[in-house]
Amino acid sequence: MEVAEGVATVRLERLEKKNALTIEMYNELAAALAAADADHAVHAILLQGSADCFTAGNDLGDFLKRPPVGESSGAFRLFATLPELPHTATGKLSKLTLRQKFHDYKLA
Image 1: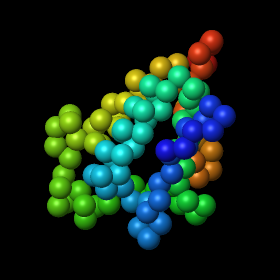
Image 2: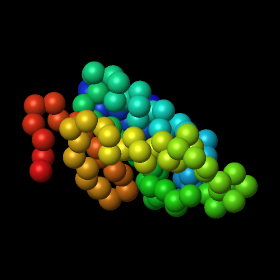
Image 3: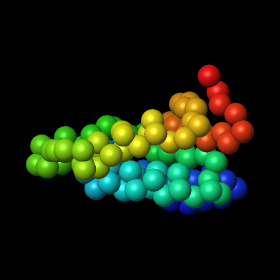
Image 4: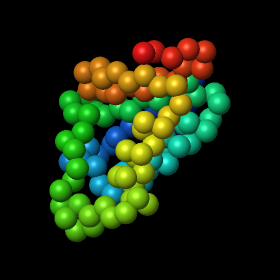
């Protein structure tokens, strides 16, 4: 994760598999979002894939070998963390997803 000018950028970098998400990647994404949320200098979180692919989705081979089980799983933690980020608005732009934290107002 990189932070610059109030924006935390989290890049998916598994180009050989079109950024297909593994259990480890879910764990890393959940930890990065929690760290960005705890950083008072961060006002936006940018999840970014490669130029031609945000993500192909789950790495099915990895999930068949090690399915996510229980709420401590990285996949469950990530999807539990996303809606809990305070004062957020979500927008999807082409091949990236943006979550913006607004401290003075909320978008409806």
